[in-house]
Structure formats: C-alpha cells, structure tokens
Image 1 (cartoon, one colour):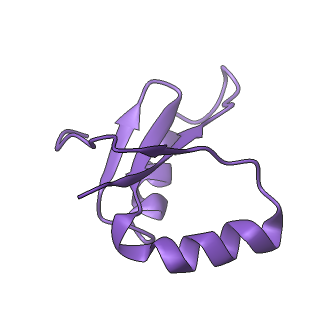
Image 2: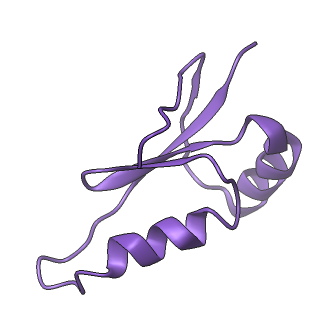
Length: 76
C-alpha cells in the first residue's frame, strides 16, 4: 500500500519559544495522529485523509510535495 506523506519545513527564528515545536506537534496531531517531528520540520502521514487534504491544498494553492511510498517512523 502506498503512503501519502507531507513534509513540512518550519522557519522558526532563533529566539522562538522553546515550547513552540511541542505546540506545533500537538497542532499537527489534530489533523493526523501520525506525526514525526524533525529538526526544523515534520513528516505527516496523510494516507487516510487524502481526499480532504487534496481539496484543502487545492483551494489554498499551496506548493506541497507529497512523497509517494515514503514511510513514517514511530518516533517523535
């Protein structure tokens, strides 16, 4: 089964609140429970909600790359 993975990049200022990445993770988990935080970003497994995400991304005109066949690790 092919997975649909969204990679987000965060452009956080060096003086950003230290709790901001954790708050971002909790926010992203409102959209999908499969979130893996990275240094400066996150991976989201959107496989179960692709119709909704395609509609949302199409409406906002976002430049987003979905990586076909990628795997999302269990760690955060």
